[in-house]
Image (cartoon, rainbow over all chains, first blue to last red; front, top):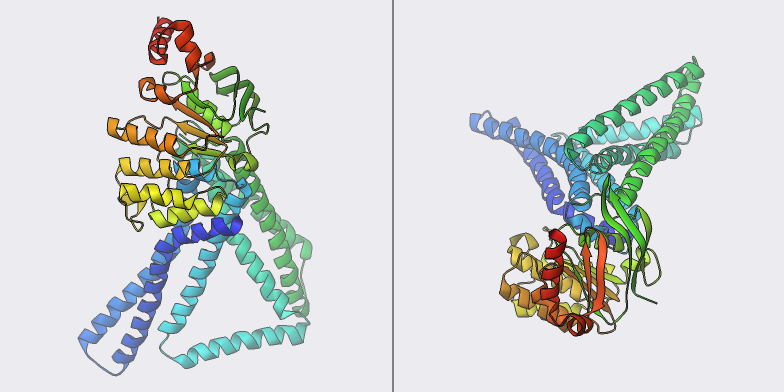
Amino acid sequence: MLGKLMKYEFRATGQTMLPLLLFLLVSAVGVNLSARIVDHSDSNAAQFVAGILMFLFVMAILVLSVMSIFLMAQRFYKNFLTDEGYLMFTLPVSVHGLLWSKIFVSAIWFVAVGLADVLAAFIATFKVSAVVNIAGNIKDMFSYITTEYALNGAAFVAEGIIIVFLACAGMCLLFYAAMAVGFSFPRHKWLLSVVFFFVFQLVLQIFGLGGMFTWVQSVGPASTASVFAQVHTSMLVVIAAEAAFCAIFYVITALMLKKKLNLE
Amino acid sequence: MPIFECRNLTKNYGGVQALSNVNLTVESGRIVGLLGPNGSGKTTMIKLANGLLTPTSGQVLIDGIAPGIETKKLVSYLPERTYIPLWMDLGQLLDFFADFYGDFRRDAAMEMISHLGIDMKQKVKEMSKGTREKVQLIMVMSRAARLYMLDEPIGGVDPATRDYIIGTIIGNYDPQAAVIISTHLIADVENVLDDVIFINKGEIVLQSSVDDIRQKYGKSVDALFREEFRCWEN
């Protein structure tokens, strides 16, 4: 059932996200072409058009980022906490399935937006050789890490991906937990959601900073060779910490939806 | 085994008691009117049966089991709100119900929709309020469910739409299934009911067959309801 829930979640969000992603890529092509024209022309009109296209490109990046976060919160609210909740919570699926479908789809959109931003930047880049150089440098860096410090570059990347996914899931769950708690009250639901969002975030920062400080104290100074090993271990610690926070917010959200659902 | 049962069911909202020690059973094959004034506890009982609320104490059972994934496969529920997603078109809505409910009869739904003359590509948000209500009723009645729970299906609609809704319910439910219709508009549904449950201030006041009421009191359910609830208000 998770696959079916995700299918409809993608349909609902794709109506907004796909046109925006397409607009970003088209505007990147526009920036690239206009840069080529301006490079061979002193025309004020060409420079004006290039400026407009660059403005649209930057706006597309900003709007896409904001929209992915807005949609993540809006879909949870609309689908679970308004009249649509009568449909979703009477489907023969578990609360966990409902919640995971939202988390996965939102996290996938966040990653898609990040990748689209990188792709758009590559497209917009005037010189293709610069892109090739950057890609080459990244490859060299991983080869260097692997050969010089005996670290598995692939594991390094995998850990990075997990950190990114957990960070995305954690951000979703922070919003979800705050709304699930706020909307369980009979009145002032939005106000209480905002209050709980800041309370949760404050707790997160206190524990996050405290944990980071303790970790840095415990590892002490390191040689150059062991710096990468420490980075590697630190990434595992970050994964564990992110997973713990995700689990706490997940439990809060699931419990509130199961026991304290308060549809009007 | 009754298809729907409440055992000492109590639900409190904070300090307010919405249902108080309710005991009742509904058997398969019956059309039951859950009748009571606004705020009497009808919607709370239906929400509890659908797992949208959890009881303060007591039990609510569907075919002998507490509300959960398995009971949601048996119950076709029409809330008093318009709950179908506005972003979907009619075709997507049919896909949605077919994907999640194994008992969804797509052909029956398509036939009822064709009578309404709605384009399959029309989005729900482009439909009038009345059309949305008809569409969601069609979705609910197109399931071959064991229990239909319809919360105020004829509230707030014009008389012609009321006739359409009642006709759709009677024309499409499985005779082996039970139908619970919650309403305070008794005259409109009285003729299709087998049994009635009177509920007031969270307590069951009366559970009887319509025939018994007519025999025992010599009056219609609507007349009895008006008389009884007038007494309670005084």
